[in-house]
Amino acid sequence: MMENLILIETSTSLCSVALVQDGKVICERISSEPRAHASLTAVFVSEVLEETGLKVSGCSAVVVGKGPGSYTGLRVGVSTAKGLCFGAGLPLISVGTLDTLAWQAIDGGLLPEGCRYIVPMVDARRMEVYTGVFTPEGKQVSPTEARIVEEHSFDAQLAEGPVLFIGDGAGKCEDVIKDQNACFIQCCPKASSMLHPALEAFRSDTFEDVAYFEPFYLKEFATTVSKKKLF
Image 1 (tube, rainbow, N blue to C red):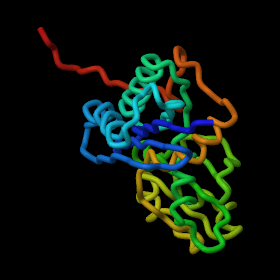
Image 2: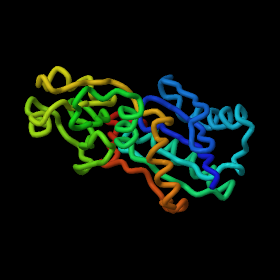
Image 3: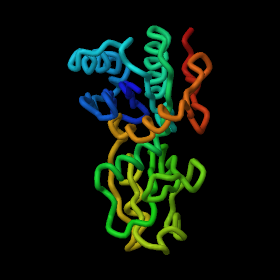
Image 4: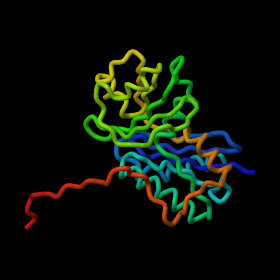
């Protein structure tokens, strides 16, 4: 079965798109330019397709990061993915941001020796992160949650051995969690790291309803009302 997948990851400050051909990532585009998701995501898709000589209609599915993460980034990624699916009649696959970070650690050879758990962390605000606990094999063993990190967070996991904290929320926790078993990698999820869960979903026909799929925000988007009088 053909496994040509378009991967789109825009859940954090990093905007990235990758193309999978015959089960392998063959090209990728990445940008950390601030607030550029809306202007770059579709461009990156066009570029990776042109580089490989593929057309959208020649792909098998579109894969998008579903969150949790940035409200705006997720909207851009999901909207782009839906547009591609509707236009070419392709199925839609979603991959959680925490899963992507866990596999970024696994496939990137970033696990510390004897690692017992991976704890992906997506930055929320102040000392809050979106997080969950994964095994070194990429299996999630605790629910995804919004959590305020303090000194004794993840004590149970750290008592068992080395724990890798990875993501754009990991850096701010390094000064709080002082356990000798804690390892920290500050980074953003990349589209290429969606490969393993994307292929697993594709091969098991685990697809989303393109019309009704919505990002996983975890928390409601908060807006503020200006107190300035316009008239």
